[in-house]
Image 1: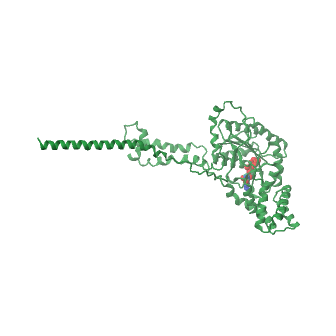
Image 2 (image 1 turned 60 degrees about the horizontal axis):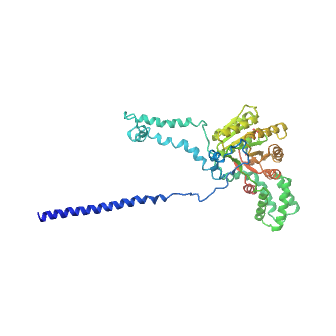
Image 3 (image 1 turned 90 degrees about the vertical axis):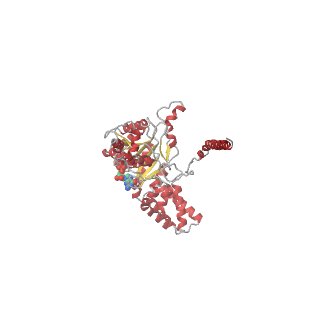
Length: 475
Ligand SMILES: Nc1nc2c(ncn2[C@@H]2O[C@H](COP(=O)(O)OP(=O)(O)OP(=O)(O)O)[C@@H](O)[C@H]2O)c(=O)[nH]1
């Protein structure tokens, strides 16, 4: 009783003490672990762009067009539904990367994982599809059949996009750089002969006359040529230009200044809170209106915009088909009417549909017309007036064929009278050394050249940049 009992009691007490200590320690640990999670959550990635903004792309802005349909007075309620355009507001250059993923991811992502389980009809792959199909507990070999409905999306995928081949669009940023080679080939003969003349330093009167002739041949126009030559003469004397490098630097500066880099060359294609941007493409037959409309649609789609093309060229039978093809290639909508129908009605319907469908930009291709035919020109004025009943026109782009040179200026004058041109698209610059028309158009009309066509390819449209143009000119 005595020693054995005491030892037993001591052992029990020791066990109790150990249990108490362990229990106390565990309780403390748990308390600590409850508090801990608050800290780790602080690790949140922030904006990684470092404020970087890409440059050199197309520049879009919101045009001046006023809202045609009356807007309800209550500002706060009007805002929410129109909230979408807002994130778009930060302008052009970067969005390129946004659009492609949206179009590309859809077709590719879902089918891939599904294809694999199909052949492997065994239990392993079935595990995943089973989860949603849980309600059917009975048949065990069946799971393979369940995989079949999962495959369905794969089969349905081709059915969804009606437009069979939506094309890849060439990146919009840096277009002019990539296409610069085409410009140079045709243009730099002018630059070379100018540099040949100016590079030697002191010029006699004959040499100055040659400089003038070279500028005139390049279609820079008499007024602009005189201005350029006067400034060159002054500056060459004042700066004591002796070498070809100095002459090149001066000539570059003078030509760029003459092209007025300060002009707003943005395309007014950003939507308004309650209606799409409306762009009218006008010009003489064969200058490249339909082609330009199609190319512009591609640029806008690549920029993530929803685009509708209005086929208001009811003169030429194939024009609407041509436009439809352009639209289908990028998944844009088209509004077209009967052949020989009223172009103004089609333009009106295009804008109406654009408003209904929440389109971002409606681009209306008009019929080519001779600038000398008053009836046709009146009709073009009517197209614009009718559209304006629905929504203001943000940009009226006159398409000029650079290869026609001087005649382009006469066209520009007449069109400007009828429809208030807001910008010029100079096409076919890849095939001419007469790009000098750029100087004249801007000088006479005070309207900027906004875009240039540099080939027949679908993505051969680039923003016009005076510096790049002059660099190409000088070779
Ligand atoms: N080389 C070159 N060809 C171009 C360019 N832009 C358009 N074209 C070509 O010019 C031709 C006429 O283009 P269209 O777009 O049909 O001209 P349009 O002004 O719509 O003609 P109409 O409908 O008759 O008024 C086509 O063969 C185009 O491929 C360009 O920048 N460079």
